[in-house]
Length: 506
Image: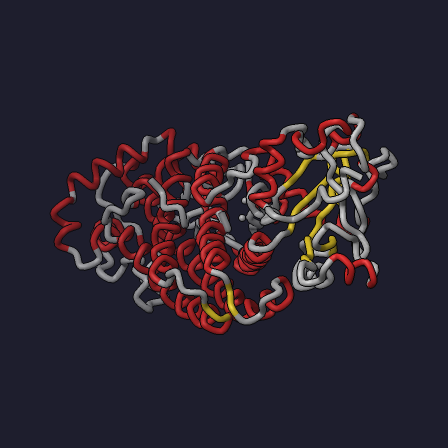
């Protein structure tokens, strides 16, 4: 069972593949006497049609002693057998050439034509898997450094307490980092719809990468609130540790060792990497950064009374008030608004009245912290935050946990017709702001329903008289017409004790 911390970066994007980065799979023009040339332009279907999985299983069994005797394990033994090269290993050991080979000049298999074909397919797949791990490790290291450098700015912009980061926020940020890597790396490995990858391969890649990185976050977690600078330093440490962990994963696979996700055959199954075109590292870094930014902002907002109201017609005019246009989304002809509840409990009733504050409400609604800077460092919008939260709410109400995120991400990744990363920050689970569907108020004869939605402002506070006039005090049915749903919303949005219903009796 995957750890809750694998949770993602992976509601974390269709990976962009750049032809200029494609790995070479032949030696160019026809080469006289090249026994491998007829096998060029290989596809996953070629791998399947020629039963390469079975052939590789047999090779493992036949050469078990060679694998055990070689310092580089499987890849070293296979390189010596297929290339007669004692240095071919594809280990991440500082060498820039230990995974290179020229198909026409280097392959020297003493066997049947099928053996030559299979050797070429396996050599290409191993090389491409090695390059995949190298790029993912480099991209993730860059993105974690990006989070470390920007965390202080994000906290100062989106959280009222700019000195100390609450433990739940810290945990959610760490969850987000490991999740987004799993999602993006998993999609990257599948290479898009042209790769006939199996669910097993998706599972292996997802689990292999995240199992390497997730424990690093857990090692740094405790129940002590930390200052922003402390967490920034932790992320910097994790960046270095993650690069090493992913390097270790590559080396274990190349040696033929088994991970929780299986050995190297689990990754190569079905020809998943036989024609893998490589990864556009810049695009991968950009997507990781956007996902990390979105999930971090969500974690910070979720620690505060930030919430979404809506469900009425776009444009309002239904007698339940009007929400803030600057933080709204029209989705399926229904309007949704993003709010933050600002408490003013330190002012008593008479002082609030003197200064024009709404009386009896203990506060007012305003823009969530940092809304004015939201998206400045990325292409993420307020509409993205609302849309993703609605997707999350539609799927699991207020019960979206790290475990839920992990299982949902893996389920989607295994269905290669879908790509969660293609949706970026709009995907379910990127944002989990609590939602209250107040469309029920449109059809009820509720007292003060015209103030259910209000714009931002110090004199603006919603009045949520959810029940009928005769029973407003015991029928809180504002959210989806259910009192249970209403109180679940208050709990999720940190709104318990707020007097939204003050004045309903007047």
